Image (cartoon, rainbow, N blue to C red):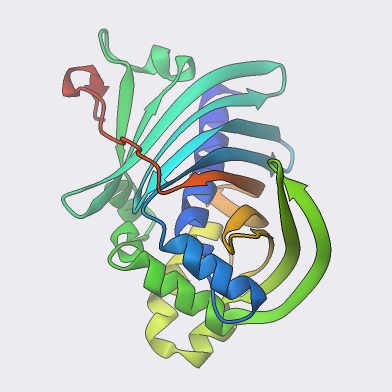
Length: 262
């Protein structure tokens, strides 16, 4: 797989992970209360893993540590694609109302000017080329996504108990129909259309596996969703394991002198 293709696949996987942070919240059944309580946490830290499959191209896996606070996130990960394994660091911030992604990896070194270690990607600008308005995912993402899942949940199944990161949990599976949510609340149709566009789907239906701890917070979340980046389609299965809530995190842009902005 060429470097550009590998990067596109990685960005698709990272993008899917970041979307999950803002869209996987909930409604009003056993799982919904836990998802809502989780969404109200000031911050969270945990582990992130993702497996992206591109037909005819290959599989890319990501494993790393995640910190999140509001609309910002920081991930330190290892990316594996075929026989290649390399570190990558990603920071997502909101700058002047737009989502911005900073990336650092040896994979990017040959594409950066001398002295630069990070590349800054304005997701709003790049999204505009594809007709996607990333700013529409901001504003009040918790309220928006809670409403979407509340209106779109068509089935909740109890799958028993499991231990996650040393904690006893109850395992559930949600089936969420985004188009159903849009039909029930037409005001949500624009944001749902953007989410479906990011997924490369005209009608998005996903399963979300949720593990709820005795503290009524989500301890693990897993789901599979299609994605498209630069015309490359992929399917990503992502797992987020939450290790702690409301702990100090510091998420900031890297020094400007080390950043390359295409």
